[in-house]
Image 1 (cartoon, helix red, strand yellow):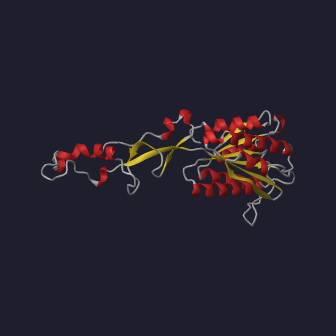
Image 2 (cartoon, helix red, strand yellow):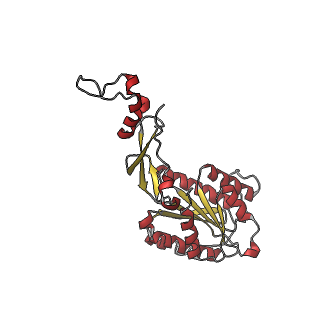
Image 3 (cartoon, rainbow, N blue to C red):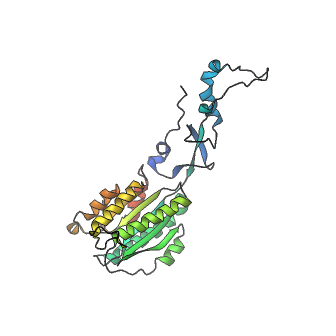
Length: 282
């Protein structure tokens, strides 16, 4: 039976589970271990392959000197091991911010803008990229495409309008689309979805896709994001007396973390995101 030379999970090696270190699928990064290949070996781990083959040399009739022209070791296809590499990566942090006419919209936008810029100020250390989608009326808009530039964030997030209804399902669908696009470009960059909303959805999915209940539409999109294995946190900006369980329901459907904010401030949002990035699943 071949030796079990699977590499230990990268999460165990990362400090407190931070996704500052992630396995990469190409030849970039540091060689940290070996694993059985899923298909064709593209980056052979010679040392691990030889260790896997060595217990079977007598059975295979191999000789251990090459003086007669034979190989010192006989290696079979099932001995082959693939290198496992790790590289330092950041997160793609996607903010989904409610700019509708529900209570405190302007305060939400100001606090989130401050958090975005704060995250980008130390992005050079963590290699994070940050995006922001605002939703109001019947639409959601990517007001900040994925970037590592605080200057671009300052320019793009200057004066953002607020007011109108709450098209949450459409916003979640747009977030899913953005994350999938970025995943194709950077498959090794883990996404983190950060929702800042009281989650009082009152606009269903457009184009005949609505179930008739805007909140059910939002829950359905959350379940799709959960199936896509998107890590998420949902920040509840409402005062304690105005929390009706909607935000918790959205967090549950996402398989994410519900975080009530006692104060809607940029530093509170920043701290919540950084804490989420320490979690093993992020």
